Length: 415
Ligand SMILES: [Zn+2]
Figure (cartoon, rainbow, N blue to C red):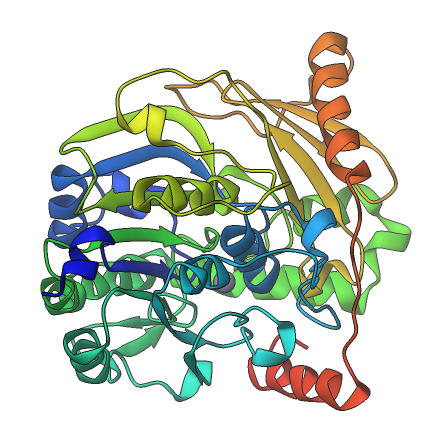
C-alpha cells in the first residue's frame, strides 16, 4: 500500500435501492453480512432519507443539501445545480480516484455523476442478479488508491427477485428473500473492499409492499378503480383510503418509506456502537469528509455525525423530506420529522401531524394537527427555512437529454 493510501482510506459507499431500515435492523430478515459490518462499526438506528424517489434522494445524499438547494425535485427534467459540490468532487479534490456504478434513473444527464472519473450506468431490469459482482471486485483490487467508489444496486427493487431461482415476486416474502440473498451475495464484495476501507451501507429510500400475493391482487383492483371510476372526484374519502394502499415508493412519506439503514464500518470508525438519535442522508457527506480529513463543501444543510460516533451528543435537528414520485403527478408532499413527530404538508397545504412514539410503533393514522400547535409551529418553521434557502434549481437539460431520461423512465415502467 502506498504512503498516500495510509493517509486517506479507500471509501466504498453501497446504496441499495429500496432498502428498508427494518429489513437490516429488524429480526425478520436474516442478514449476517450486514450484521457483521454493524458489529464492527457504527449503526445508525434512526436514519432517514430526504426523498422517497431515487434521483432526488441520491442528490441529497451526495451533496449534503436538501432539494431546494440542489434543485433535483423529481425523477424527470431536473439536473443537479452547478452551485453545489458533490461527494465525488470533494474526494477528487483531495486526490482520490472516483468510480461510480449505478442503476436505473441515475443517468449522467441528471448531473449526479459529476466528479466521478469513471462511471457505468446499468439498465435496471436488464441486470441479472449480481452479475456485476466479479467486475466490481476486480475494480476494487486494481484501482489506483486512494479510491472512492459508489455502488448503487437494484437487487431488492421490485419486482423482487426471490431466490433460489430468482423467481420474481411482488409481496413481502419476495422482498425479504431478495434482501436475504443480497446480504449473502454481497459478502465477497466487502471482503474485496478490505478491513482498511471505510465502508458505508444505506438505502436510497424504503419500500411499501403487500403482505401476501392476495393482498397484491386487491391493491391492483383498488388502484384500477381509483383511475377508472375517478374516485378522487366523486368519493374523495374512499380515494384517500385507497391511495394509502400503494406499492413501491415515491408517493408518500410513511416511516417504512423514509427510514433507511445506515452503517459505517472500517478504518477510522469506532467498533460496535449503535446511535439511536435521528440522523439524515444529508449528514453523510460532512461525516465522510470529517472522517477522511477532507475539507467539506461550504453552505450545505447536513452536519458531521462524528460526535455521535464517538459517543458525544449533538443538538437535535429535524429532518426535511419530500415525496415527488411519478404517481403524484407533479404534486409534492413535504414534511419535517423529529424522533417524536412528523409533520406532513399535502399539495393543497393541508397539514397532518403524526406521533412517532420513539421506541414503540409509530402512529401514522391519527392526525394531531389541531392540538399540538407548538410542535406544528416548530416543524413548519423548519420547512419554511429549508424552502427559503437559496433555490438554485436549474433544469438546464436539453430537450434531447430530457427525452433520454424519459425513455429510461418508460423502460423502468415509471411512466
Ligand atoms: Zn430508489
